[in-house]
Length: 142
Image 1 (cartoon, rainbow, N blue to C red):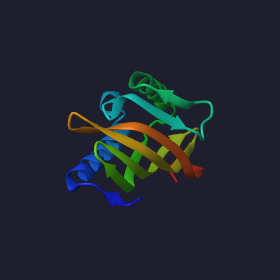
Image 2 (tube, rainbow, N blue to C red; image 1 turned 60 degrees about the vertical axis):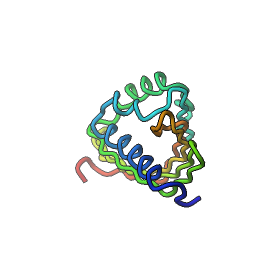
Image 3 (cartoon, rainbow, N blue to C red; image 1 turned 90 degrees about the horizontal axis):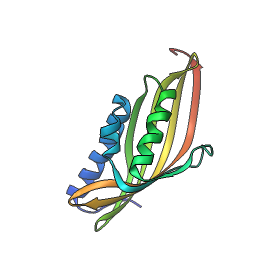
Image 4 (cartoon, rainbow, N blue to C red; image 1 turned 120 degrees about the vertical axis):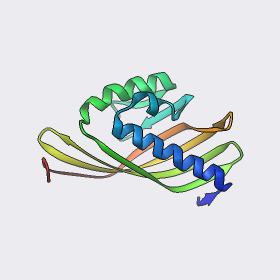
């Protein structure tokens, strides 16, 4: 997978990814939820207690609850590949996040394998599957 598709669609998908990251950092559930298709699916295989959540409303409700464990989070994301086929796309993206938890500063790096769908001229996440790549823990503030 590389970067394929029109410049306009690739830019719109990058902006979707950036809007998602911005909403996480701002803890804005409405803006974050607006990045998901109504019938979306979010899989977290490295978190079997969460597993897969289906439907935008259920995804947002789960995210709101989960975010309570990530105070002060700083979340960034960038695409590694975007492959567009009409109104569907496959995306590979990487994340880095920093947050304080239990007197430690945690730095997570991860990988998302995504599908996106274009509905009425706008791109949404149809499915996202997250895997951890690396976790670093240090005394708080380090």
